[in-house]
Image 1 (cartoon, each protein chain N blue to C red):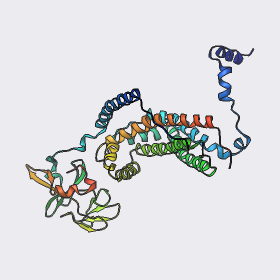
Image 2 (image 1 turned 135 degrees about the horizontal axis):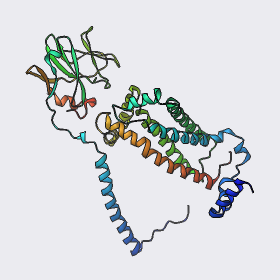
Image 3 (image 1 turned 45 degrees about the horizontal axis):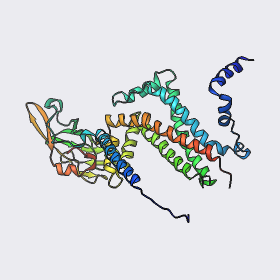
Image 4 (image 1 turned 180 degrees about the horizontal axis):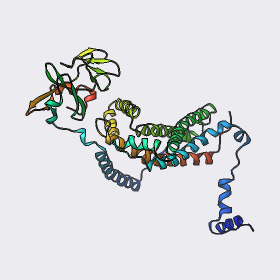
Length: 164
Length: 220
């Protein structure tokens, strides 16, 4: 331990270090390439697109249809008041909520979260915020999902990452 | 001269076996080591590893890492393939036993003080091996593609994602997107059967080499 550590740099050593740094510089190009390869494509996704969910006669009043919207589980409900669509990933811990007709709620089985099927707001249970609503349009006897009603809100829910 | 002696002589003449083998194979260990089963824990872990390699190779012949086929191929291994359930169960139990053996091995090293100079580096390699072993377990857990697998991976990648600053990028590269799906399955499969085995073999070689160079530590 009491030996002094000395560092002598000769001109030759200095040149070697420089050449080594150049080698590291070029090698880092390979690392960037590998990272680029591993980076998922879906990381940067553009605007959501119109998707057909179902034909109107497939979903009579009081029934539901599950579908995928921007790669997230979503649900279309035909309430007496009309069609409604929500992202069905529970805002609490990311389980999938489903339609429970006997209680007239969207129900998350993991921690008994309950959502209003008309508005998506939390009725009871641990979910911190409502299910995000999806704008829909009915044309030519079919129902289409257009976009998130509030994309800024969807961006704040971690379970909907990449969907808005 | 018997047949086995003849064969040995044939190889010996060409490969210098009698000169090279004895220092490797004939390596007597102290009495206190051979008589104490606690010294077998590392070897138990290695035996589990060998069993896992063998059964893993057999499982890979039927397993298909796609969301549609993964669960069905595992089901097929368990119900239709002759001896399939045996192979998979052995893989399952050897994996559990290996984690237990590695943990106990580490506790033995710790409580006997066997990590002290000059064996610090072997302790470092050993802890890396422990991490590799648990990563093996984590990546293999997703492959059956059932509810347990999905949610365990959801939680695991969520923990990785909670690392400050880098977390989001780590989970993005690990999951291969924002959701656990086909990309995640193939990534975990590649990690489980290609990356980790290559890494663990190198580390095991270093681990065993250092044991031979430094010997087994004396008891405190």
